[in-house]
Length: 288
Image (tube, rainbow, N blue to C red; front, side):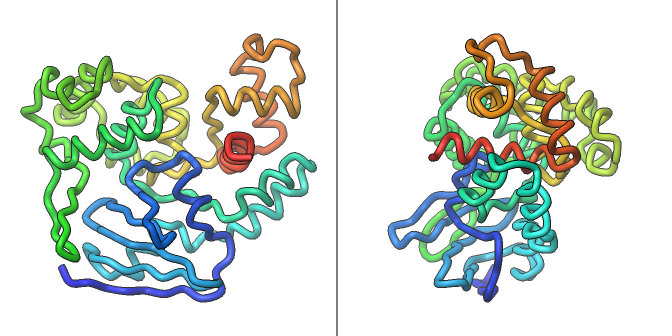
């Protein structure tokens, strides 16, 4: 694969930190010059922003412009989405001003499933480390700029990996979950292509919940952050519970706030943009 480059001038709703540090992805790393470098599918890219121009450079499996437009969801009007959400209330407006450059990436479904199984009760540096070791050991190698990069392993790449081997890679209690989920996908108990074609979000969610290590929060993250792109789901973690309680529920004991209560408010207030509202609120609360 030879190096390609693509530039976009005067782009709105595109800030590197907001996109790569909002909790949706784990294989993008900030470089010394402020750019970000990442591996996704069979692509290695460096993304930097100069003024109002975004420059993408790297090796791609296909035309770089098409790859970038698909992965970074560039055909969606985020300005319109932000405008609609900002009208809901001042909290939403503030959170959008803070994370104005967020875009939800179109990530590979399989990689998103495994990444968020790994993310359960884990911190970002550890999650990144596990995914990197998994890729180095079982993913396809790509040479670029004199450096070796590794694709995320496919289910076939992982078919002979034992629970013990996963444990050696630092997966801890998640070892059996990764092993079982890989087996389920290989045995076609859950068909990923069919999930992508199914327009019924609740049916897709039910299928995801049959996978080992996928609970409600992980399922919602997969629905929102992968190529499934279901903006109506509202993943709930500690930060989201906290921000929803502080802003809307105001219970003195936030641990008593139920998931049902939060989901009801999210649906009423944000409708089919609940997932995006969640990202702005989560990122604002965690970072600011």
